[in-house]
Structure formats: structure tokens, C-alpha cells
Image 1 (cartoon, rainbow, N blue to C red):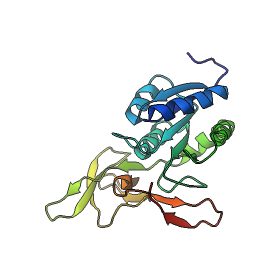
Image 2: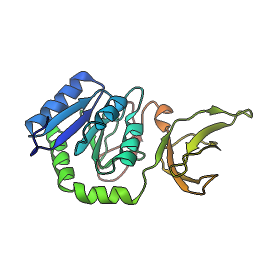
Image 3: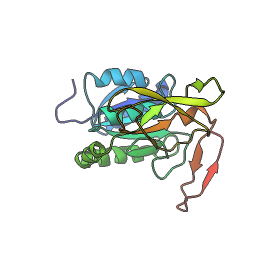
Length: 217
């Protein structure tokens, strides 16, 4: 059991070597550490104990980090979250990622992650309040094509829990969309799983000028 005076951090990473390295880094900084091999494993652990901060990779099998972080924001808005990936060079959280901070794995100095964790813990109360004021978007996988060959998705309303289809005429992008539930007229915010449609995401160069270029991951 974690010591009552120490904050627990959950590290979610499918690569064993990276997972162990991050756990050792944060343990040496004075935190209690739990680890998970992926999104489903992490959700099982969250049934037992809630950490103060989650550090999660974005590129994971079965449940992507994008989807996992969206679930965490909806179900556990009090938890602060750090997204990490080696596919972005970003100065802020990449578009479409539901997180409080971003760590460029393999590019940022490890001390940067420790500083980010400490800052999120200091501001956790205000962040939890902000999270609860706006519902997190639902992360939706692309389904298939209808009888006319038009791609569609199935959206489940977060209020009445009924599902309804929406045609998708454009390639998914990492943007939060909104639609009105066909049954209860509730506004449903969602993101289509664009992560499966690209080989490498747009990488924002940390130059301070905001230019974006596409590079191989």
C-alpha cells in the first residue's frame, strides 16, 4: 500500500523497458508508482485505487492512449493526466489529446517530466474543478460503410445512453466535434479515431513560431 504522505503516479506504457525507466525516474523523485501495460489494464487498476496523476503513452495496442485519456477525463475528472509520445515535438498538448500536459518521450529531458508532475499536483484542485465544468468528448472508432458505401460512425449519447449513426464524409481529424442526440436533444461532443488513419501525426516544431511539418515517426 502507498504511504499516506506520498502521491501515487500511474504510468501506462506498453513497452517494458520504457515503463520501467519512467517508473524508476518518478520513484526516485519521491512518488509511489503503479504501472499498467495498456489502457484496459489501467482501467482495471483505477477500480482499486485512484492516483493523483496518470502518465500515459498515446500509441498503444487494443486501446489507444487517445481513447484511454478520453475515458479517464469522463470517469475520473479529478485525476490530472500527462500524455506522452515520441511522435510529436510539441510545446503544448497536441490537438485531439485529452490531457493536461504533454511529454515528448525520448526528446524532452527526464527532469522535464518530474517538473510537469509536480506542477500538476500543485494545481490539481483547480484543474479538477475545470474538468467537471465541461464534459470530455467521447472517443469514437470508425465503424464501416452503409448500404450506399458512405462511411459512418455510431455515437452514444452521454445523457440518455442511446446510440445513433452519423455519416462521415471527410477523413477524420483530431478535432472535437459536436452533434445533437436524436432522442433527447443533448449536445454530444466526440472525436473520431483519427489515429488509425495516419502513419505519422503532424509534429509541431518547438521553435516558438508555431510552424507545423510532417515527419516520419
